[in-house]
Length: 218
Picture 1 (cartoon, one colour):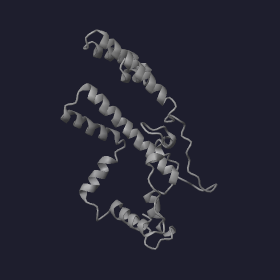
Picture 2: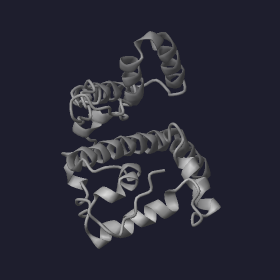
Picture 3: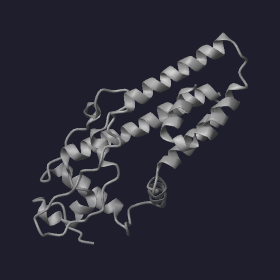
Picture 4: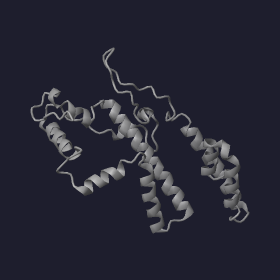
């Protein structure tokens, strides 16, 4: 069995009959013989190895993250998206900290003030400096799920290149592995440094001990 069919059955067992139908149909186009049999055997072995390797990857670990403040003081309760990925096993590398960026600048530094003001000027709802093209780009890439946008770009690239079935299988496997790794490395850095988000920083610019960061409460 091809690895993707073996994994699909593991992930969505309720659709096994449909998966089996598609699998049988795909095999029917391949001539019977030793090569076909060897391919089926290899696919089953690869599927089993992948499933075993990812069984303890922690991506399905319970979400135990919670922000903490003083007892009795209100705090936003909207949970972050996939925080468990901060400890998840990445694809193709030993650990997420391999690509962990350097620490954010000190709040009192000129570099922090520069970045603060750039974000404030370009990111404001009524920014006079942000171009329409920049606004459109942000709206496009901050959809409720950016995955479909990247997938569509990959599909268009595949069609333009005229990739074969095997080449597409490799492309989309690597593509989705890389997306998973971006979540993992992103959350690793986020929870390692625990640095505030721009909206929090700008609303509290009077509390960072930096005279070059003017607060904007709105």
